[in-house]
Image (cartoon, rainbow, N blue to C red):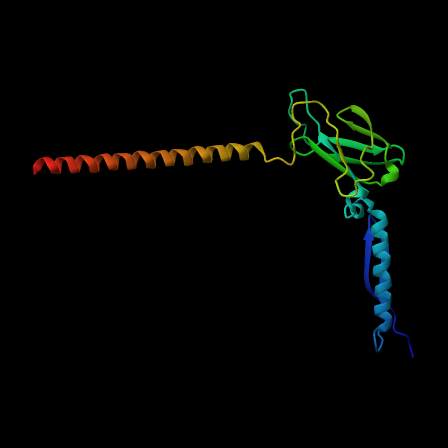
Length: 206
């Protein structure tokens, strides 16, 4: 009896490299197929965890994260958008290149531990280099460990504060509300004056 050739069940590749390929043979119970599929999924999960350390580090606790953030400002005091910023721990030779947003803000998050306290930190942007150290309180396991490093001046601001347009909007709303209250008071005052005049004229007729 001829053996049925294996059928291609599925495959996954990344950057042109075949990560896995499963094959299936018709069986009565399908147990062998399920076992091969489970094994393949485990291999893929392992490959992804090794290939993307920055993604897995984002789920770590606060005491395993260290964030470098700041603004890159131009000579005109405005943020430089879409510019590269290199952030590197030179002791462990690990770094990231991130881009600034429309306000010139950048952020890079590392997977570091207490053992990395004091590591030399290199940050480069817009042709300028700054040398710092990884600084945090090793005893504090809950607070976010981060440092702000800016380039230039004039565009840095608190990224957690509401935007300026929101304050302007709130101010405009307050003015409108105050104006409406003032109009209501004027209308009521005139109504009272009209009522008083009506009463006075009625008394004179009698």
